[in-house]
Image (tube, rainbow, N blue to C red; front, side):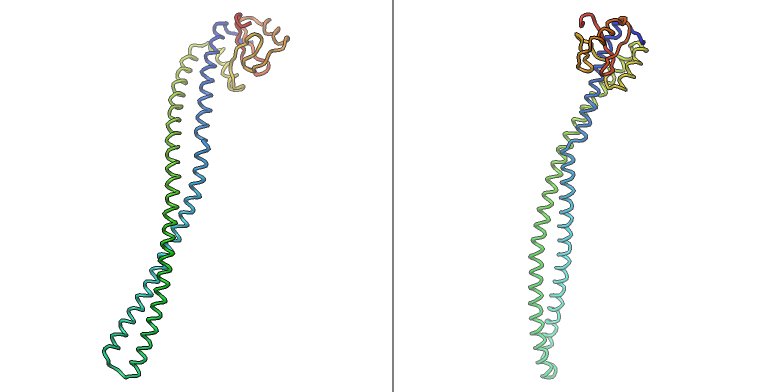
Length: 245
């Protein structure tokens, strides 16, 4: 059975307190790193960006359609202008001039139809641009919320990291002054059980929170003061003191 002076064993409680604080800080860090708000905002941002991409594509397609419509109108207007110039010149056979008049009338009808198409596309484009602007606003709002929460979490994580460094430094310095054999037993127990040491207080193990059975208590009381004893339930080292009996 491993041994250490009772006064030395009492120091394990301070070491356990430092380890408990480090464990709490690690848990806090994991909670911050896995904040559900970040996950929810990332999901919302993915959806919003997808809809924004679709809105931009719709605007791009409508703009291309508008350019084609404008080109069609311009092409017909150029033909009308050219034919009217020929007609106004008065040169040519009368039947050709009559045919030219009919062509101009037909072209004017065609231009009117094309201008209607151009207007419809322009109106649709205005609506699509409004939709894109609204979707961009949604994306900006989500990104703003994301940035605010991320800054908050980063600040909290920095505080945790600073405290972890401070506590780890205290822990290293304190552990260096402990009995090496006892410390080795503690470290092994901590790694296996999650708790290295706890008080035995009025028959209750603070490692498990349970009252020990009369048989277990009798066995522990029979052990020498410098014997390192263990909690039968949690497996951690039980630190004894006459004041706690």
